Image (cartoon, rainbow over all chains, first blue to last red; front, side, top):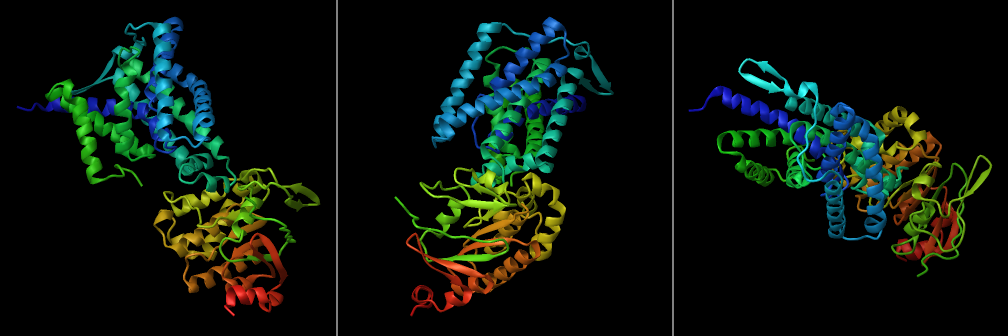
Length: 290
Length: 226
């Protein structure tokens, strides 16, 4: 017997969590989708954002969203530095992508160990007055703990979408991996363009990290759980499509939520990846791929 | 390995100069050297603008583009996964070109109405002729003073080559461009050129006006098959 309100609540929770998944995956959509760099350390940058948010929230009482926002420039600079190192040691030498992958594995472990040394392995969570409250819409109950991350995720995605579609830098980022020599013939410096793009990708991780620690208690190894999921969202949405990433994230969120509600949470990731394979079999470019 | 040696060419403002030669003689290498894509071992490339002389050797392609020198590369080098419109907007990346974006865009659509009809189509899905139009239009979007065109006729049907040459001439005249074009297609290229050079094995073997080129032995040997 299917109960309507159980179903509705599961779908709504899925949509909300999807908006959050979009925020976590945006960096991969940009860096992997547009620059062809498999930054598997991205979820660890997200976790770093979570720990910074936790630290500033628990010590100074700063609002998590505000922390995510003010950390974005710092993360942008960190992204620049990471890309410049990657460029000088790998890309410039014409190294195979596989060696670059090893570099990002290294970055991943480095971040994880640093977090463990600094913050320990205990679960941490942030406080904010609105986090415990919820919006009651008849049979559907919307908790702010999920609704605010959803809203911020959608705003972040929309902002990036317009950045890519409407600005000269955005368009240059879309073109740079297709033909970087041609881009230099347009008067743009390809290395600088990639550096900016990588910086933007990492900057989204600070906000995603703030959202993550609002939703769930965090621990240092949590980032690993997201590695598969973020790549799934980026590929499902169509590589390089920010809009696609949002829709893919919401679809994945709903699929996971329904599975968790009816079959148990253990099946969630299995269903997500099954769904991914199915879509790729029918539409190899992803939902919004070109 | 030395590819080019003893190469000395010059152009004055408003000229259309062609660089003729068959495959593998160094035409493209010369253009790439001017654009900073291939670094020369020796020599100078002097660009004079408003009485100031600048040596282009050692400058990066993007720096040279920002001086108003734009190249239409061999093989077009479009962004295949971007639309016609996005390719054109990217052409206007440099600061000076952004101010003239609307004017240049409508001019491009006037010269190549086909591009206007296909604004939202992906560049990679267009025919060779349309792609060459887009490559030229994208270069025009950067508001160049000097346009270097590398082998525009490669892979195109004769009728398209003829139309393309007419368009290049039209754009050159309307926008007061200085054009350097490499070509293998002698008869089509000389239709729009003021004068030209013939390059053989990395050396300039002949220079002269259109009329002089047409009566030259090298030309007969290379292009007219006699």
